[in-house]
Length: 54
Image 1 (cartoon, rainbow, N blue to C red):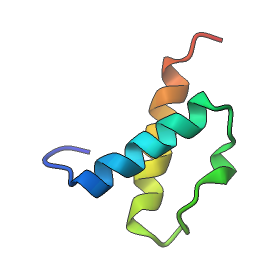
Image 2 (image 1 turned 180 degrees about the vertical axis):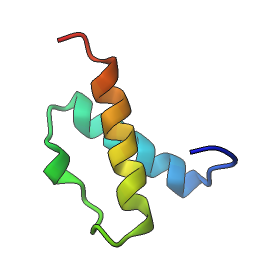
Image 3 (image 1 turned 45 degrees about the vertical axis):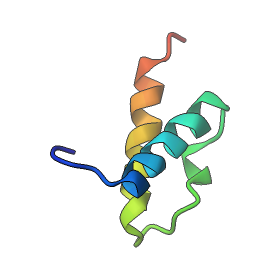
């Protein structure tokens, strides 16, 4: 994403990253697929996953 993110959008990104750090699955995304924040949560999750050293 580029540009300004709202607090709610940033929260969704961080929730995704936190879920990844906690060892949760991508299927644990709490947002329904049609929700605006679904993709942001997943983006946070995947960015965190990419930063892992497994």
